[in-house]
Amino acid sequence: MPIRYAIEQQRLTITAEGHVDFEEGLAVFTNGLTKYNDSQPLRPCILIDIRLSKENRSADELKGIAAMVSQQVKNARIAIVVESELLYGLSRMFAVYVSRDAAVIKIFSEEVTALQWLTNESQIG
Image 1 (cartoon, one colour):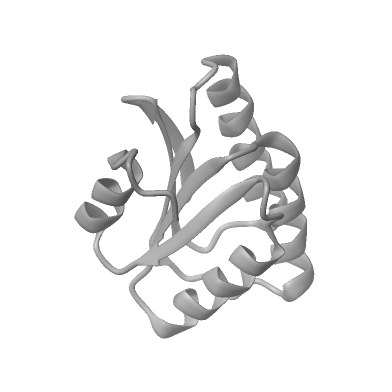
Image 2 (cartoon, one colour):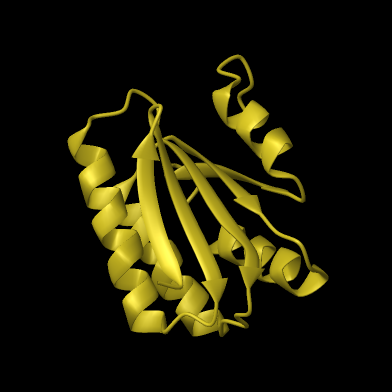
């Protein structure tokens, strides 16, 4: 499956590989957030790993994903791991569209650094 989620160690991880159909991806992401919210995390931590993604989402698609995230989480920490300049730029656009009270978003090129940031509770932004 090109997109999947896992809930582990108080963290939701979304992983996308290759080409992901927008509707399918949104459904998987929404399902993952719903199940994650059921676990009632104190401060939501979400890792989005798109290093192997081949996507080039439109601004409207990014706005749709951001609206869903903004509705489902508050005060979350979201780390996005990318490998290309294109995915970095798309991730920056996504971060702009997510409401400020929903999440603090940072973009990383290495998963280990992203995980360190997510688990460091003393960092605020």
